[in-house]
Image 1 (tube, rainbow, N blue to C red):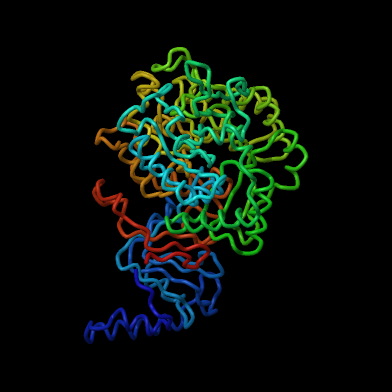
Image 2: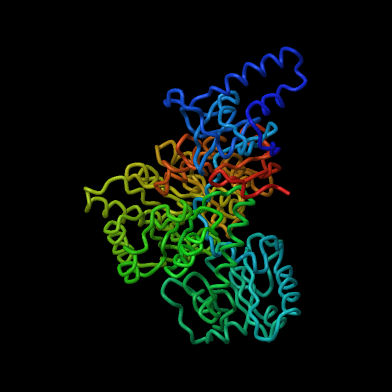
Length: 586
């Protein structure tokens, strides 16, 4: 990608036709004459107002079925004002227009992160990154190094470990999870909190459990579990709602820390080509801070948020918090987030039948169904989307039942676009219910390839094949499938997510039931226009059309046509938000 110096149309044409000989010169003169009298469509003889930005010289994929690809694009005041051939859009280039020459590269609508955790992404940037740990010893080594640099009493935090990705089962262990002893011996003076990759479990050392007041007599909270050893002692693993016992012992974040997390999260998104982010559940306090940052003009990525709070808090505050695209279209609050079950990796997903590798368990129901039904009534009353995390087939069935009953009780309410977040493991009978109810499957394709190696251990082969990550079964039925990464569970990188969608290629080189993979345009739409639809924002973003926001991602390779194994090598060259280049590859 080259940034062409700002200049007039005649200068640009002369540059493009330089070296073309007398024929090129004649063509240049003709085009210069045409440009000098160019008019906006429908404005009679009025000269075209110059654009702030013109993009040309490559392939621009619009994701608009009526106009799927163009040569050039013009934007003014943050909005797209023209699409067409390079000659047509040349009329929009003036003395102050910034012209981007794609140099043959690909431009697509700005990627939309359809389900992530914004502040957690920022927080993860200031913790130990445990995603690549290949063993429990790797984690101990990272923690030991951090402890050597930490002051006594200072919390050491990390995120991203997953016991199923370790080369060996640690000894001693409970359910494959290590016992805290080895960690506690390294960190006698520092509390340690290590969050599972899923976010649905954490590991704590003895000091952290001491500060939290947890011992053998501490009961499991509703919807959670303190995993214990054969002697009944807490072994360090806290599952689902039990995580709060440790979190409550951790000091609350200051506003300064919150602002830093927001800055780091936004910078990470923009560097990965993400122009909009749908946050899957934040408190009213976090929403208020992010609204303030947006109002100040300091929120680089566009943010659409779901509120996670008790029904009492929702009833008292939702009406004053709901927001549609404020802060220069950088901020909106449009949903409520619940989690009815946990994650498959920690055996917290709620299943219809027991786990294949733990026959005594069907997972965890995190919130009573009746409480979720009350939340559904609040969502209907306030005109916001209800977005419920459901991973197991029982959880998905219960959520669809809640939606169906609520819709039946309010037949006057139409086009609600309520969402099942994850929809990872479905019973065959529930797949057609998504389109029947108008419910959106908000999925994360990278989870399939990340989790795939151990999913059959949890579910068995039959359940895995019939209902795990069944994108094509849902799309063929007519359901809308949108895409995200669940960052920081996975990297926010939309290219890696795209590759998972079109390949279902797992780290060992095998493919997870490849008949369910998406084609490349389906994958691109899932992370652009379908994600926008999932937040009632498809008239504003998600495709490149005149009158929509000029949010664009420029990629080094054409991920729609290059060989499949080249997709992961594509990189983000530039990220454009509202017609302004906010990230350029160094």
